[in-house]
Amino acid sequence: MKLRFSVLLLILTLINSFGHPCVAQNRPEYVLVIHGGAGTILKENMTPEKEKAYLKKLGEALDAGEQVLKTGGSSLDAVTQAILVMENSPLFNAGKGAVFTAEGVNEMDASIMNGKDLNAGAVTGVRHIKNPILGARAVMEKTPHVLLAGAGAEELALKEGLEMADSSYFFTESRWENYLKVKEKAEKHGTVGAVALDKYGNLAAATSTGGMTYKMKGRVGDSPIIGAGTYADNNTCAVSATGHGEYFMRYVVTYDITALMKYKGFSLKEATEEVIMRKLKNVGGDGGVIAVDKDGNIAITFNTAGMYRGYTRSDGERGIMIFKKTK
Ligand code: ASP
Image 1 (spheres, rainbow, N blue to C red):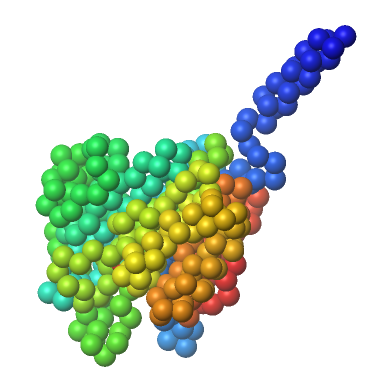
Image 2: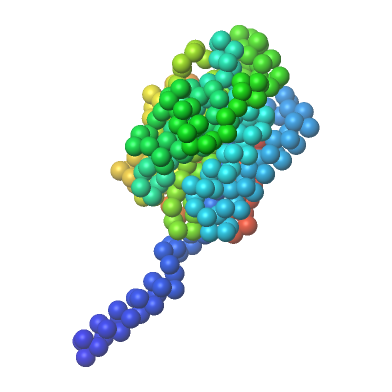
């Protein structure tokens, strides 16, 4: 009798697990969150045309990533596709439209991380890879390393057949004006990032940037540093940061958020608030993060006036915003 009951229980358990292949209860099938940089983004400084252009491009980036997730693709591919749209747009400080160093050249950084196995790849100081995020992914997938700099990263990109571009491709008039004005405190940053949860429960995060306007030659920010600008772990969450990189490195921001969840049991929202609105804000570290946790909860937290951002979920919830009001 006892044995029969155990067999019945086993059968019921098996049926249950086949019926719901690794999808946790109430978890949306997929989630994608993106950002296009945080900073002194004020409504009064924004023309309606410019605002419209940003909203449109953020929407396109969401569409590109969502298309991957909707058709059963991976979170890694989704964040890559979303970032590509923003890197190819002159509106954002990544790829085309990257800011200039003090010497007037572009030195770009990017990173990507897979929450499933904690594999990661990054490039820093690259000047000719058309899409630095693809360089970061090549480091992750084709080398035993995590971070390649300058010439080494570009050699890998060439070898992998990635599209290369001349310096003139990355040039935009508005970034150049910004460079000329920087001493008068023009906006110094703006980066792109994406985090996603796919239907298999895998998290991924990616970030790409030109860095900070007028940075010293060779300066490396947080964006290509795993644990500072980008982090993903299936046990906790995926995070991409934007802001004053030196602070994000010193406070190991994206890893700190996952650590608060892992070791202190914080919720995603509590963890992002603790790090961005308290730790960083108290020391004057401007910026913010986008994040999604393993259950599909979203956090978009920033201590600046605005942040280009958007999110979309499998249940149809979607939003694109620029100015203050955190989710
Ligand atoms: N965090 C980037 C850096 O410091 C810049 C930014 O996000 O705006 O390079």
